[in-house]
Image (tube, rainbow, N blue to C red; front, top):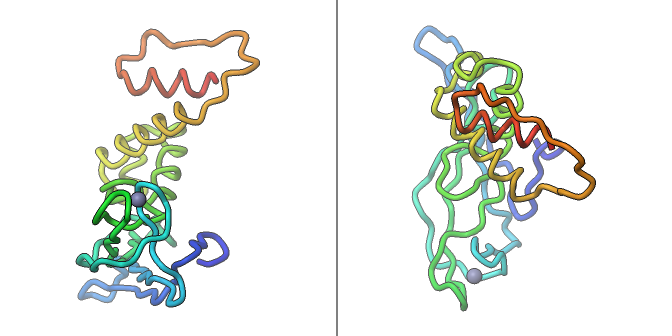
Length: 174
Ligand SMILES: [Zn+2]
């Protein structure tokens, strides 16, 4: 995990395979903890800030390992930022209140370019809405990071009925 998804300031504490009653794998839960020697950062300005308290444990959907639904589990801290007051810390695998890791949103968005969204959801054990939200986030992220220099022409499929599809096509054309 540290090789493929290393988050400075955090450590992987425990990786546990949970099973159904019949012994079949149900889900993998990856517990993350704050690194002992590192402080938290404010999620708004990304500056270090003293810890205020700790919220309840939450789960974020991660990329399925061996086809098994996989979650990151972490109890986020709130920090007391001199500028922004008491806010949640920056959680680097997550954005906003989304219950899906950034890695999983990228993963689903890439597959949603190759498969129907419903098929993508079924293949990776999640919902159509999760795929939809991931593509939506991916498009927003792409639009925010696009580089427009050097574009000479764009192509848009006007027959596409979905606004999001249209935006994806525009993004891909870029
Ligand atoms: Zn701040």
